[in-house]
Length: 554
Image (cartoon, rainbow, N blue to C red; front, side, top):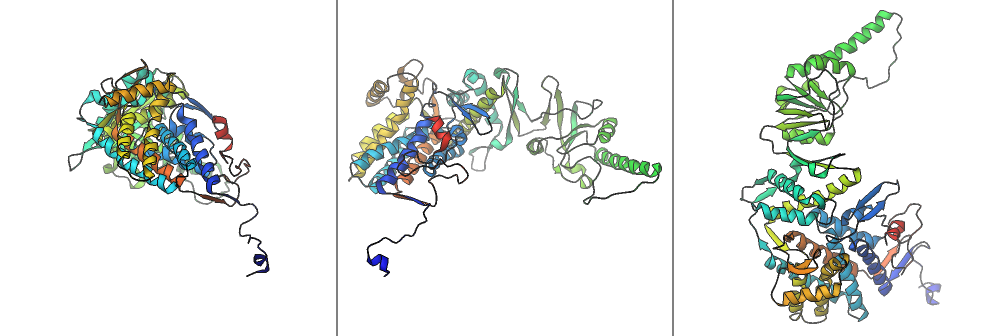
């Protein structure tokens, strides 16, 4: 044993720059950071939720009330807060909607857990109680959920409308919901087991500004937002053979730099003639293949454009890679990377039409599985928010078609779950019972916040909802527009059961992950950004290294 240890001095094993937060300070630090994230998005929940304006470091502005978009755009610089952001990302990936609900419930779980910690209840008891409550809640959701006929178009439209309500797409939700249902049906196939499988990979979304939202349309096939490369080219082709090319129609360049000394004008002319011959050969190869239309991802030389026009071939250059990949499915064509090795079997088949008003080509294949949803709006911000809302609604309808279970919205499911969990808590022994009751209280955050965001009294609303559910009205929820408690399922407020199950599971697992931490050891400041930003949080500072982006939101 060293002389220093014998004298009672501690052994220093960490660097001077390191930070350590232990026990209750660590719990307070983590819970405060997680709750701060949840509170940042709470005001966006529901049909009357407010929007956030997010300005990134480059000055780009995003206006949205989509939970996952807000959290991804915020400059969050705290390890615990980023764990809560992962809840929203997981919810988005797995369910497509319900991100704000999942994050809000996670924050409320931690808030109620903090109260239990103050009563000297050990974190492991709280974690076990939350886990039991989560498992029971998912079983109850399955019991409460209504099985539907996935061919019920009206119910699917209601599901889409519910998802879009409160977002930028709400004003035209009737028109858009029909487009969304039609789009999902177009890409739905039945597998060998007789189950519906929705393949959204075959659904392409294009946006266009300067037009009204109600002019949005669903098109069979794909869209290429480009112009013909030459004025003398045809702009339409029926029963066309289509070549998708990822190879430039230009003079081939050498791999190494070369210099050539020309002493005679005839020598220069020979070089130019050879270049022209190369381009003629490339165009002739395309003509020999029998192609009527060429969509090229790379460039097309001016002289090649002239020869293509003489051959009567419609050509488009600099097409997006994603457009070519989608068109390959629409017209059943291969994407050719080397023109010299192309064959007629690589060509696709379909109709190409031109919309001069929109400046777009519409490509429709024979029995094409792919469809394109063309969203129109007045400005870029409108179109961006519209696209986010429609994407969520597409995921929700796709989940409903695949899963076949729906729930009443408007806070109905959360109040019913809370009631059933309180009954379940009586069968749980030990201190875990208190955690189950805290879980039930946390779920009731959703109807409370819905009421708050609608300018209603949250306590009165919750009392009325509880009374309705005590009377056996399982589908009683809040109508934020009329302030009434009613059967929200009949009113058309319908949510997919899978999204709610995922929200409960993600929220409880994230809360348990945070509660299990009792010691934070950081090599530097407690932030995840190790750049020049020195806004890292001091231990016990609550928000910690949340950075300027988080502070600006609160």
